[in-house]
Length: 318
Image (tube, rainbow, N blue to C red; front, side, top):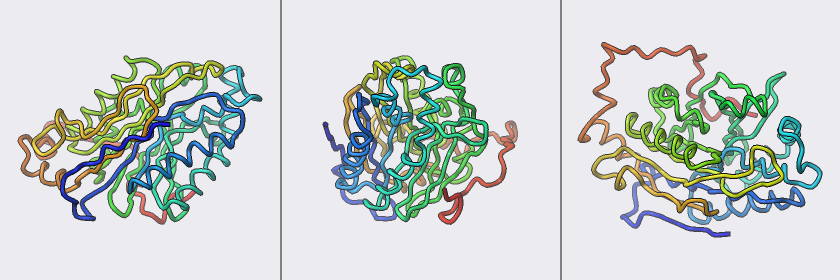
């Protein structure tokens, strides 16, 4: 495995202003036992913590690697996703235990979970104190609907952590501007985008939209994707990924609004420091100030979400 660090060499930031994030560009491969999966996940969590990360982000559907286990190989797509959903408890326990053991917040990408009669794509956020918060994917791609019968959720959560309020846009969700706009309106400074894309075209849809969300909302957007091939697993045959951190495109931020990014399609760990103070200053004094300059007299942002947008550390436990 390749571990690569891209940590800012600038002077240390105030502890309350700095957030260090790690993104796992996860290379799926054939497994012979669940223990291989758990060992690989632990390896990356350990590496992220060794680099001092506050958060580690895994990609959407990285757990679908489990469908390459001998007893699950070559199952029809619909049968396979149901088998994966039945692994919810061991998947959640694995990542929750790691979050507690390594004292780090883990953003669990996306895993299929049954809720009543509905199968949803859920991103779990694991806290170091053992709590878990679930964010469903809201917008479901046509192939997820056709092949896996995934249905969209209806909750969109602004999640409070000790250092920063975060939100999740699971893959396709980032292509809908109102999702990130709502989270930003609830005080979110950092949006995580776990994704799973099979082609360069699909990847660039996610990438360009993630960059747009960072610019228009003046937030950081942190993305991580799956790479590698699973020849025995329908819908997971090929992947394209280039994990990255995007920022407002202005002075003081990374060149071209890119704080850090990986090489394409190589399994790796990317680590970056984010200065929250820069966001606050940019919103007030940037070259452009889109948050301040919105024409609310012309455009009225409305939502039908249940008002549970800000989730403190004591709520929404799994």
